[in-house]
Image 1 (cartoon, helix red, strand yellow):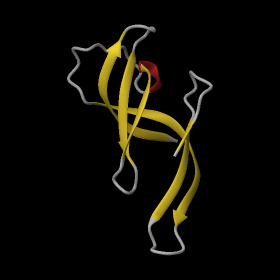
Image 2 (image 1 turned 90 degrees about the vertical axis):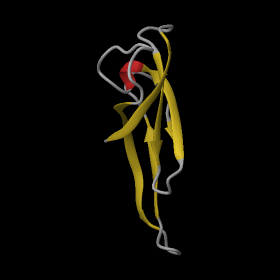
Image 3 (image 1 turned 180 degrees about the horizontal axis):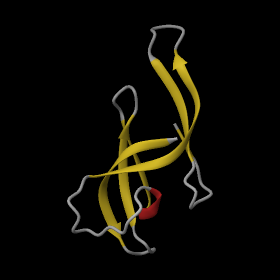
Length: 91
């Protein structure tokens, strides 16, 4: 699954091809931030001269999605697992 993100900040070219910060909101409107290499989120090179924020996506896996038993609010757990790294991030 591809999770839509906003690429909000460029940190520099080291390490290549550059590192950016991205944000996305969960179902409750809370903002989460991911920092990784450019190609994790977009298929072209970026620089600090870009008109941020830019649209991007990140590969993830939905582990659980549904309604809570009390209150009826939505919930879900996503594992962020970009193909370029072996790290994952859980929410």
